[in-house]
Length: 236
Image (cartoon, rainbow, N blue to C red; front, side, top):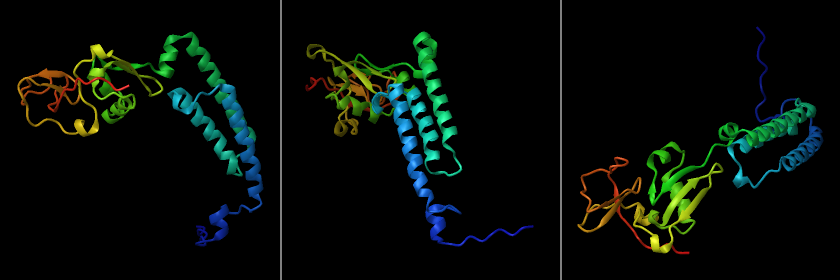
C-alpha cells in the first residue's frame, strides 16, 4: 500500500492559495469574478427583478441557482466559465418558461408562488390557519405593531402574502372592538386574577370571554392563558 503524503502544518502557500496553485492565479480570479459579476447583473436586469424584500419563493430559488453557478467559477481553477454561462442560460430560460406558464395557468401559479393566507378575521387569529404557517406570534405581532396596532380589535382582517409581508385592513375608529393586546410588556404577563364585569382575551387566538372562569380553557384553541382585553383606538 502507498503511504499517505504528510501534510506540512502551517504551510503559508497551502493556507493562502491551496495545494499547488500559484499566486499568479489571483490575476485570473480578478478576471473570473469580473466576468461572472456582470453576467449576474445582466441576468437580473433581464429577468426584471424587484426589491429583495419582495422576492417570492420561486424568485429566491432563481437567485440561489444563479449565485451557485456564479460563485464557483470565480475562484476554482478547475471550473471553467462556459459551463457556468450555460447554467445561467438554462436557469433564466426556466425562469421565463415558468413565468409564462404561471400567467396562463392558475394551478401552476398557485404551485410556484403559493397563495395569500388570511390570519386575522374580525379581531381574532384564525388559529388553524396560523398554525399551518411557519410564523411565530412574535413575528405576527411585530408586523402589526409596526403599523401602530396595539390590540387585535383594531384589525378587521390581515393576510400573509406570498412575499412574507402582512397586508392589514383596519376597523374605522367608530367600529373598533375589544381585542387581544399585543404590546410586549402587556402580552408577556397573562392574568392571574379575574374580575366580574371584565372581558378577557385568549393569549393564543384572541377569543373573547366576558366574566371568565379561570379554570376553563379557550373553546377555540384549548389554551388557558388570558389577558384583559383592550378597546383603545389605533394611533395614526
